[in-house]
Image (cartoon, rainbow, N blue to C red; front, top):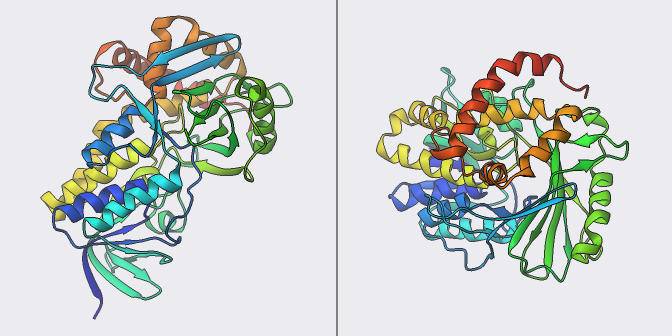
Length: 407
């Protein structure tokens, strides 16, 4: 007889841990399987937006072990603006930097304390019946039956392909690379983002370079780029990172890389995020902001939502999850993907960046977007700008796709 669980979560990162914590605290029998060993280091920028801090608060997880961040320093050419995180809204006025090795361990430890059964070095593959309904997972040690399988596997891979949940091929995606360096500014209270990057051919790169101080003597340094840029396939991330490190070497007094730089893919779309017997959360559901590559906050929120809906009514979780995620995120993420096509053109990117930080009012809106603080229904100037951009970019989208820069 197969083992039985209410919920099986494939993947023990922030999204999977959030789902497991929420479901286990409600009394569900939850099993988490992860092909990695406990304590693995997920490649990431390590930054937590105020939105992510709020999601951690919903899980009753404090950020005392993280380095507190008060705002964002944006650099575009010779223009630099240091902006505090907004106050008085639904998110706190601070973020954090929490290296993923420690963040992920803290989250999954709480899931274990809540009663989830954690199984490391255990790959899980969804099992489908004759009606293509997911009825559990297969593992090297045996099959597990479950009412719902939560896919928290990060960037699309074998599990996504099996479920028809791969990336939409015509939509943009991102690539990023990061390393750690020592710096006397490791306790800086601002994230730093340089929005004006160029490759060695002088081509403007739609993306940014970052310095995220970890407060432990080190800074997470990295660069990211969107697939909509010209010659993206020939972009050398290691070279781009080396050039960015040279750019910040004096201002941050950085030492050599403490480890080999590591790169990763940023999914920004998915063909499906749910189906009979399963839901995908976080990066596996394409919930990554195309304008900054951030997705931890969306991962936490989607994981909690999936578990809450499961506890309320397991039979309808897939349909309700897809609808609610769509209401919350689809408009914003669609606008971001269209924007990615727009800034893939250097002649649009360069003046656009000057506008983005040129005035305090526009810079504040840029901050809201870069901080994942805007949703489809956000009030105020940022919400109005998003809705106007969604309409305008929707009109321009066919032209933007036809004239996209050659990869």
